[in-house]
Image (cartoon, protein in one colour):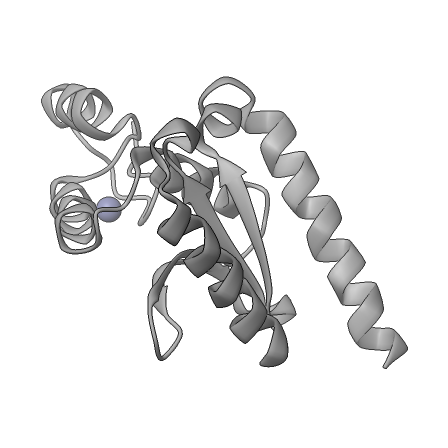
Length: 147
Ligand SMILES: [Zn+2]
């Protein structure tokens, strides 16, 4: 068993501890690091799962990337793609809804594309979610080449 982040081998106790708390196999150091990220940014657990799944797929994502105004759940800087995980559609207030749209507009003006992925898509369809993000990345790459 190895850490999904650094590849360091981990013992069965650490395997269970990281799997149970984060749902990802991580060494002690990376478990602590990810837990701190979650505490600091209120990062949804699905963002952690998508982050490591994208890394497995050969993408270089960044977790909780600071764009100058706010922290983005996952950013893929090569193609200027920001990914926000939506936690609870039903809980969203009207202020939050318009703020999200405004944020998306501002990052779009700066050349960034923002996509919002419902956490349920990641929870139940992680592979399909990754496939779709990969499709978006290749689409963005094609657009960058075209300019
Ligand atoms: Zn590690």
